[in-house]
Length: 299
Image (cartoon, rainbow, N blue to C red; front, side, top):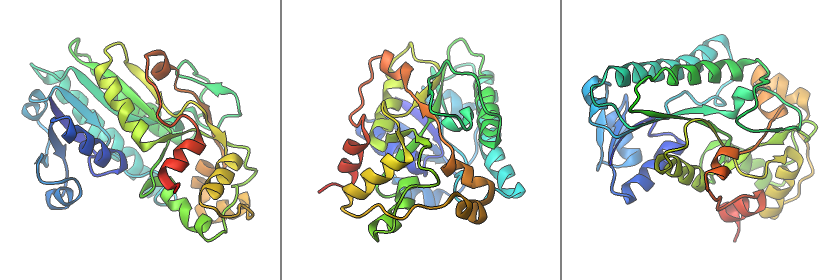
């Protein structure tokens, strides 16, 4: 199978490429730095620096994961523009090229995030939920999704990945949390009552492959584990897995001073459920937070 990936050097992209190689896929990666990308994902794939109709027509599946990491820097106006444009511009280019192709891919998978729901209380949310809280994360994801859904080829199925917090031991949000917890300085964030909707990296990749192989899955799809947890429970479970105490909460005011508006990512949450995945027959290897963290860090 021929697969084109944007954002191939990110947390999800690197793992996905590794698994697709095992499935003998012919992989093409869009990158601005071929030398760096080949170091990160290997030299046994094709790298391109620009998209074209020809590069799209050679593909059966296009997977769009491109985007500036949303939590790497405080949200200055400049950083907000970078976060938005890095998602919107690549996605727009892909949809235009797919629509212009005489032989378009049969599947277009495009990234998004559960941030589209905005801050919510503890009510359960699945793909049918539309009472969005309109804030920055909603703005980013709403336009991102709308652009991807502009694909109008009858030949191309479109799937939008509303991804939760991806748990990986070496990169991403969880890796950034580890040091204070390893030092015994970890604790809940703010009230600790905000719900964290997460997914183990292996389940994330398995879900993408499941979507690829399940023709009835299209539109927006929540990629989160079956059992979201409050920040307090997450923090306690992480500390217990690392055999460390969980005693030092991080006050909300401290986060707001340090991170500004970006602190909202940590202080507010959503209880997101993966109804479409479950109803299509997908089974999680790590449905609960204790199993996920034990796999990543347990001895």
